[in-house]
Amino acid sequence: MDRESKRSAIAALSIMLLFGVTAFYLPTIMLAIGNISTVLAGIVAVLFVAAFFLVFWLRSRAQRRKGN
Image (cartoon, rainbow, N blue to C red; front, side, top):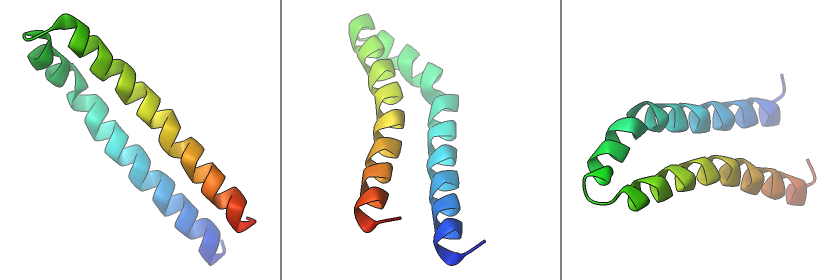
């Protein structure tokens, strides 16, 4: 495993862990926000899913620019 692929694997692992921990607490967050507004709780859930894909899409664009 070369240095660049190791860095990519570490970055992907840290992103997955961050989103994993957030996903674990997402129901609690949504219930708390749902007490204020159910629509807002739904928006938070949609934003969480969109952010997951957005992070990896942005990372792939950055790597493509570098020529990797």
